[in-house]
Length: 550
Image 1 (cartoon, helix red, strand yellow):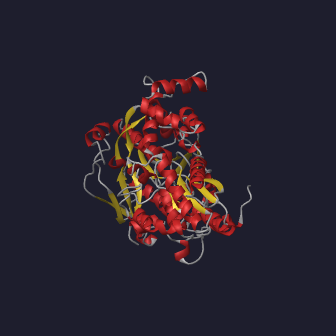
Image 2 (tube, one colour; image 1 turned 60 degrees about the vertical axis):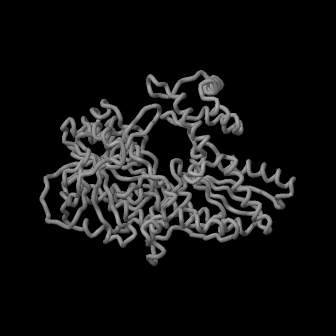
Image 3 (cartoon, one colour; image 1 turned 180 degrees about the horizontal axis):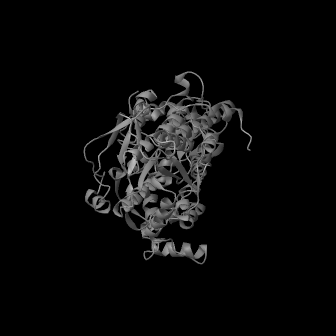
């Protein structure tokens, strides 16, 4: 038996709060028919059995006796705090419908379904994981459910275990796969429902129906504590510029939220860089100007927050990466091309890409250019997170400042420290917000199952209000989809949510950043609090509060 910390022991007793609508029997209220956010005709053709379904809202209803049924659950993709509470909410929800119901977890992600690797989640096991971070109850994996043979292998074990519904907890790609699986089982009339839950710390699985993805709150609060600690040290030693990269490859929600919480001297927002068509030198100059301005006031220190995916948002580099992803994918198989060695791969790239992209590639520092040519993820894409952007930018800023010093335009010193906050935020003990939100998402999923729904995402809304006032229901996954180019092919995917430059969170940031850049206006959020005043313990992210004008 593993030893538990005092916090784990005390936290296990926490009972997450539920929306009033889920505190007893429910009835499903259906809205109008829906359509996808883009490419309506193509999405409808691909998903004829799950397209156009209505948005569902749950209201208190009359108790209905249901025969016993079993449910399966999968944790898909990277970890995000709150996964265990989704499972505990689902567990309690299905047991409340009928104590004979069973919940089975598939081990290490979607691969567990295909490989028939599973375990029953018992009350004793569930109690070990309530209100804890991580996905370690059953583990997670990145196997994509895309092929018919995978679906057929899955139905074998689902039938063997008497599972009538499968809940897939994941991000946009995982929930796209959930939608494809729901459509396949519906078309085959297999009688198995598929429900999704919105997970990703990056915060880019959100829209008019999904206020936030779970794990974002806890991750941002964890990173903000660390950034605040660094800022306190920075303001104590007063001799370093700290370049801090945070997770967020496809969007800058984490960087922006941390900036709103901590007020660093500089925060880069990838979406703004792209909208302004900034070059890499433009970004470097922007940082260097702030460093020089503070140095002129005698302040040779500061903090810079950088989203990990910023390099992909610089238009010239984005264009280069898009072509690299195309040429390094075998058009016949859709899989990454094979090469005998690194030098052969680099030579192939340089001979295959357009002249303007080659010029951009050759303008980059040699180590960065080499990473872009070589390092690929399992799907053939550039591994942007491996590029040490924080070091690249600080190195280029140092070079520019050295030139300015010779010209008399820079009078200070420029010492640097580098940090990358990634895994630190993915499995922290959930904040009260994430504990409540995730438990509600899981419990809500049980009600979608009880109401016979498939191809739906479990959604909880109005989450800046007290939990009792939260709104529970479901949204057709097809409603969030469009067609995008992926690995050389057009594919149906859930549209990612980027930082909106005309949205309230960015506008607030933009209105204050010039003051933060010049002054030392740091905020020190401190660690996540679990007990105490609601204004300390139960607050949602500043992003949510600004979006909902709370």
